[in-house]
Image 1 (cartoon, rainbow, N blue to C red):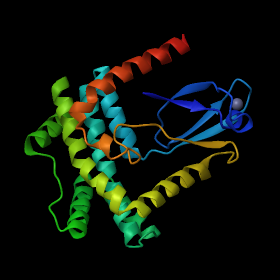
Image 2 (cartoon, rainbow, N blue to C red; image 1 turned 90 degrees about the vertical axis):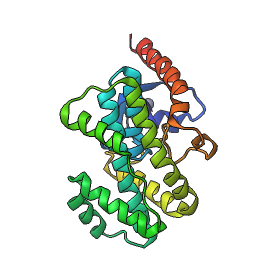
Image 3 (spheres, rainbow, N blue to C red; image 1 turned 135 degrees about the vertical axis):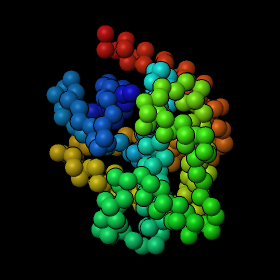
Image 4 (cartoon, rainbow, N blue to C red; image 1 turned 45 degrees about the vertical axis):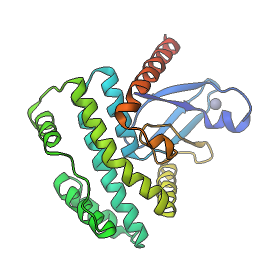
Length: 248
Ligand SMILES: [Zn+2]
């Protein structure tokens, strides 16, 4: 999966021009550098949170026929979202210190610990049972992740659909009732990445539209992943062929 990267300096110098762009493979740190045909060296910060990107990787993996990788990416997306959720709730309670980062360092390598932390945070905040993956999908997850099972396409779609339906209702609540904290999180995220860019003047922010997105309108979150996927697949195939024709 690749994303389009524009040259920040070309855009700044001639905002109205039609700019050429290049495609970059996804990076873990969300910071991309480009070297355009005019010789400018610029950086691009990807606005999306990790869980939004991981879900997109999962959907693209289905399109490409990598069903094990799809399930693994959807799972990582859910774990990323759980971390994001805990951080938003901590922000609401004015916990933004190093204590939060330090706590996460202790949880991060053990997904069961993090799931526990998410479950209790959710319970305290909502007085409701948090959503969990069903038993049959947990079994599928274990077989795929720990025993090398190669799932069917239908299983990968079903898994993505389940993760999507767990995340979206919580995402909606965050967008409506925790709007200030969500906006702060986005600013923190962008500023943190931009601070790492070699040249801050030549740094732009990219919003890449993902299926699972904090910026998605409420009506587009009404559909299930099952309903969204066929249209997504069509677009993904034509997007990939455009990239191929540009690079050949
Ligand atoms: Zn340029």
